[in-house]
Length: 408
Image (tube, rainbow, N blue to C red; front, top):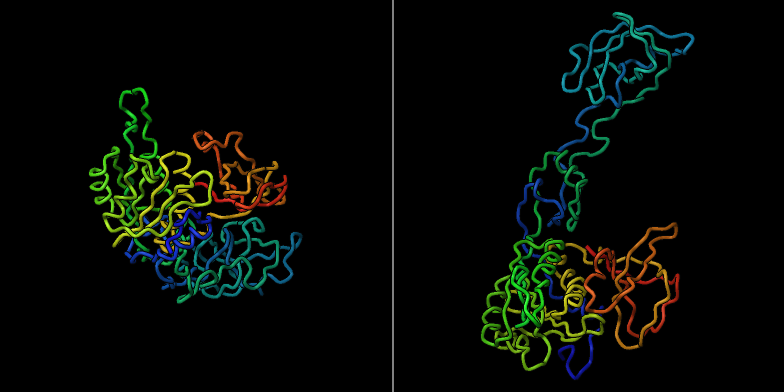
């Protein structure tokens, strides 16, 4: 049975499961690491190189034989002959002999014969000699070859998010390209005769088409590739044509027109174009009319036209799909927080409460925005998360922990 038939509402978690069950990761493509930020790896990556590639100095000082400095103290220094210098990128030309030291820079190759480095702060240079005022331990201040990474080591698993640190690690082993799941394309369609563009003259009864900007921005923040936007009035034929074009994307998001009023043509257009309904209407406030289905080659979402409701349902349903299509873990946007103030609601639908977060000693603290009306778009400005209050819950006490969905 299709979820949402016979008047029942689909709960949030069931809706997410129904969506994610239809989200196979998109094929891989080779991406230069300079363009791979926030991409997701399609396969495990093994190192082809050793890091560090050679034994090198952890600091500026002198490469020595530890045995030569036995008994050296501040009061009784040991003087060694300075035989050469090893600089970063320019190694010493001679091996180290007994009773000698080689000046060395941080990151420079440890000379043959040396087994330790003494800090420059523990020495005093005098011409071709250096007085060392501290003993050395074998291996002291030496970075060993392969200490960080050995050839064949697993650098990243499949499904890893490529942040700045991950990209730096790939660069350190000469991994110029990485196989990542393709970014999904997204088409955003806003419907309604009342909608006008941001630059059009205002008229009585008109509404600025903010969804054509907020929803594509949400898609981009979730890692979407190409994102298109279109607007159509409450006309059945035009709606069918526009949805038909949108079905060429991996994900189609239609805002508005999903209810059952005489001017709501989206559901009928989906049916005429062969889009299979999976669920319609969720146990959620705001966002009850949300719709999800599948086309031949696309995932299709019908979101409420109300901007706050569209924003909330995108985060709870569309964003997890976009992440899964990229091979990423949709759960990465979920965490727990302690509700700062008590919250009451009827035992009917789940509530997605716009909140700001503050990190305290015992974890995240969530403070609900003062105005939670579905028409209050400014309640999302400065919000960090949606606190998810279950449908059957009527009261959450101050200090009680709840699940939160992090905002971009």
